[in-house]
Every structure is written in structure tokens, then in C-alpha cells.
Amino acid sequence: MNYSLTIKIILILLFIYLLIIFYVYTKQRSLLYVPQIDNYDDETLIIPVEQVFIENSSNIKLRSIFYKHPSNTKTTLLMFHGNAGPIENRFYKINKLSKYDQNILLISWRSYSGNDGEPTEDGLYDDAKSAIKWLEEKNISKKDIIIYGESLGTAVSIEIAQNNNFKGLILEAPFTSMIDAAKFHYPYLPVSIMLKDKYSSGKKIKNVISPIFIMHATGDDIVPFRMGEKIYKLANSPKSSYFVDENEHLVTYDENLMNKMDEFYETIINDE
Image 1 (cartoon, helix red, strand yellow):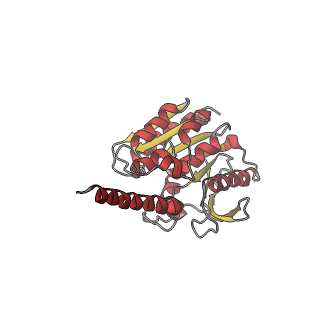
Image 2 (cartoon, helix red, strand yellow; image 1 turned 135 degrees about the vertical axis):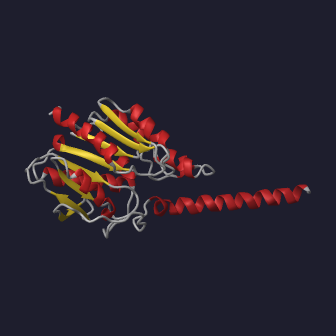
Image 3 (cartoon, helix red, strand yellow; image 1 turned 45 degrees about the vertical axis):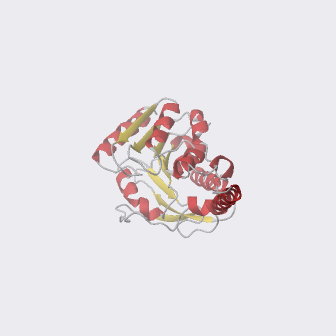
């Protein structure tokens, strides 16, 4: 192979590589935020809920589900879902978690579940803060709120929980940062300089002072288990974990998990 042909091949490969980088860079948010993907069978709610619309700072009304416990407790579970699917995909969790003496608010992000808007890191933080404000307007303070984050929602949860005194924090399949997650899925791309939404949870978790419960499946092929394990190691005490030998991204809501969840709730209730 002569020298000029080698140079041409290298230039062609470089051009293709740069095209891939350009495509991923311009499409990254549509690859990260996928409200149209519906991977789960929706479960019918077994509790009475109210559909509410929470307005964020961009005047977008976020479709949400609110369950008010008949005991009139102020303790409230605030749930932030992951990067895919509608809120109906999480109804099975609400059914399980309604066993506790707590209200439940499950919000959907901008552009999800029929909402307007375009999702961004700052946008999701704003949506979450709007949910906190909505609860505070109902005389439910931060010390009464347990935040629950699922996958992408864990990063939002950590952002909101840091430097605040919440009743508790539950993280399901957390990741250390979006850069770390992107490196896992796209090891051939310079993601550190490409990513717009970084979600640096590993740097923020040390600022969380609320009791923490972390769950993660060891066979998770979307968010590697080592990331959840690292978040747990970096987290302050009191903390507890449920690491289960499953090949699922989200942990199965079975008796074993609920037993560990019982222990966590007993801890934060007894700490009142």
C-alpha cells in the first residue's frame, strides 16, 4: 500500500469519526431523554389518587399523581422517575409504597407524560424544585419529605437533597455522573467535552446529610453496579443498601426489597 493511499484512508476514517461525533453531539438530548419509550406494563393503582398539574418556572404544567394518606400525615414521598416512559410505568411502585404512613407525589418531567417543554439538566432541577414548592404550599416542609430517585431521577434527587434537611433519600440505580455513564456506553467518543448535561452526582453526594437508602442490581447493564456501589461508599451515614443479584436495570419490587425498605422506614420514623 502506497503512502498516499494510506493517508486517504486515514482521512476518510477520520471524517467518518468526526461525523459520528457531530451526530451524537447534536442528538445527545434525544438519546438521553426518551419519553416515548415504554418498557413496562402499567399496573392499575389500588389506591385513590388525584391527578394534579404542578407549574414550573417556565409555566409548564407537569402532569403528576398525588396520593393523600387518610391519616393526614405530613410525611410525603416525592418520586422522580428515570429517563424513559410515562408516570404510569411507576404505578406498581406506588402500590407497594402506599403501605407506609405517607402521602405520595409522583411528578413527570417536562416533555414526559404529555407535558410541554424540552428536557435539560437545569430544566429537570427546576421541575423538581417546583414539586418541592408545591408541597411546601400544602404546609409540607422539607423535613417531612422523603425523596425517591429512579435512575436519571437519582441525579436530580441528589442535586435537590444536597445541603438540605430532608426526611430521607432513596436512590434506585444511581450513577456517579453522566460522563461516567456515557463513557460506559460510548467508550470511543470524547464524551467529557461533548456532554451538555453532566449530572455530577459523585461530587454532590457528600453534601447530602439526610438518611440514605440505595438499591442496585449487580447485573445492571444500563447503569453499571460499580457506580451505585461508589455512590454508597461516598455517601454519609446514616445509610443502608440493598444490592441484589439480578440482571435488571431497576430492582424487582419483591418481598426481599420491601423488607429492607421496612428497615429504612423504621429508621427514619424512629429518628423523628
